[in-house]
Length: 469
Image 1 (tube, rainbow, N blue to C red):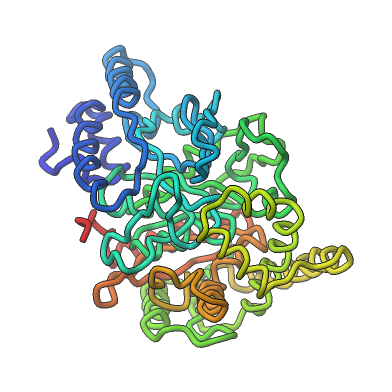
Image 2: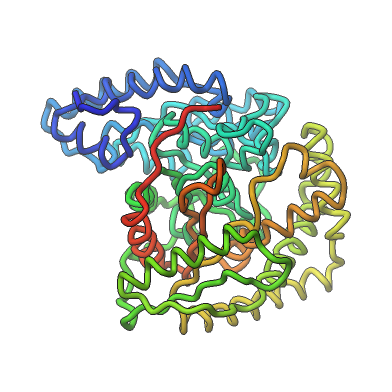
């Protein structure tokens, strides 16, 4: 047995312990299950824990190792899967009471890839109904609590995933990100959340009864949530194997062409739009200092308008939501989720057809402007969000509070609108709450993001699991 409790290890270390025979997969799983059954009572991050299924998978992993079979990079590592991702034999309920018996008959491609890499899906992580809110709560599974302060949101929509990783209930979780649903919860809970380029990881739900709207096709992605940057890299490598069920998947090597040296980095501590909290600007400048010491060429620079880019995301999303999903959400979602949708559409009224088509034309112009910016600055360090975690109820209290929340979180809408990768990473604490930054790059340059994030993490250290408040 390792000297440190297995549940405290990151995925890379846990996989190494198992691979070298210092720990069995069953021992690793049991350690994480004990931690989960204790911590989950206080935060409700994992509403479904697959005790017998996971134990059988761990025993099979140990038998494979004894037989000398090839081992995957995540062999024996327990991971949790978000409740809106198909996992065979489990409900894809999306936090909706009416879908509690919607059992998936096969794994989605990303879950299948994790299994092929040796990972053991041991639990399902909580999400708001229809993955709609920035706080994880629903009538089916109840609320997931912020482990540091239950009066603050836990994040959404991958809030259960983020809380689980932050509190040691598995070293890696699979989340999804359409408008910030990986990066926002990662920031709030002080962990790493990687949103990859759309098409990098195959992403379909075989159980889906209808095809996805255009914005979902182009902007929604799965990705890893971890406590260390090296785990985010490991998870991405495991998840990106090809799968013919997703025709959008593109096989692109993770390591891209070497950029000109020194690599130029744009810091954005004073973005357009409302001012951000000083501690977040300080974190951005601190990240810049650490990168500069490592040989990057760092300077403060203004990218194309962040506010305009985020507003365009909302105009497209609310228009499609009004015509394609509003009726179902208003019929089946819980009251808070319905109110969030109403407030979003009150502030961002749906466009008519000419306006909707013009919005996609405008997106093309914005993608071009940002691509030109990335040609000069291959890396951008900017806020994940503009302020501290919101208080419970801020997203549905009234139009003023929900508008303020969307303005504060506008930085999370940029990468989805552009179809670029982005990573949220912690930068220590500001008082009792996490501080952090977001690192962006051009399409399929996750390698540049991960390399830079590893430089920052090497100086600051990766966070340890925390005990729920």
